[in-house]
Image (cartoon, rainbow, N blue to C red; front, side, top):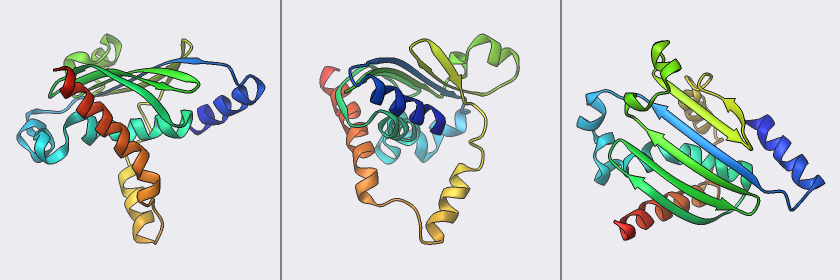
Length: 170
């Protein structure tokens, strides 16, 4: 993801008018426990867009900069789909905790998670390497690091726009 960000920045220096077509898919199977816990209660967790999606919306902001127009095609308890416009990219995104949404190859191989970002048709699959990120982040916070409100605000604002925009169209 870091290499992708650096590549995008270098390409935009060379051609500031370049516009990327991006597809972000994140499917992570969750069992019945998820919907029975606080995570499945939208009033407590903010739903799938907040509980799971915020990490990926934060990543998109980090790569592409400030978000512009936001649209939501679908917002269900177990999956959501929409589009975010950035100055140099249009991102179509899909989030799901429903195992039936896994691509056939991953499901057949026994995988329960699929993370992919496709930029202008070139896919970067990044399903592995996330196991200890929460622990590493918490350790950094306890050591005095971490991120403050200023760093978190754009992601929170984007999630808010996604959630309220979807409700207005419902």
